[in-house]
Image (cartoon, rainbow, N blue to C red):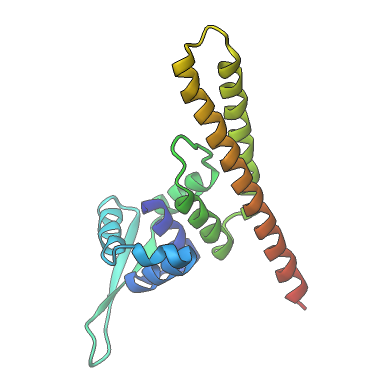
Length: 179
């Protein structure tokens, strides 16, 4: 969640409530399950780590003062590192989806390029798992685990293909809409 919040701040400084709304909107129906306080706890941790700064702004007469959060240079570096990370040990599809949304919204990276980098990593892991599954010395029970890994990687690759189609189409529509 920390990297997602940082990436959402890369576009522009924001209030906690705005960040929460952006993340919930990006997740669609899955965002409804998001704990309302999670963004604020995350912002406090990021501030303590020196990745964001905050500034108090005066609220309206009927509302309390609010804090505007912004990235520090260290926060910007962490966002850049997160966008190039292609690890997929335990895929968190929601986090990867938010990475694509934040990259596009903040014009930090091309979502299709991020999908392509992730695909290359998954294909590498799939080749390794398939080689291990073909090894005749592998215990049949352990082979079941390898089969599960292969099936999961194939499913993840199919999902990445769907992501690429959606983001490619979105880019096409946006290019047509520009004068």
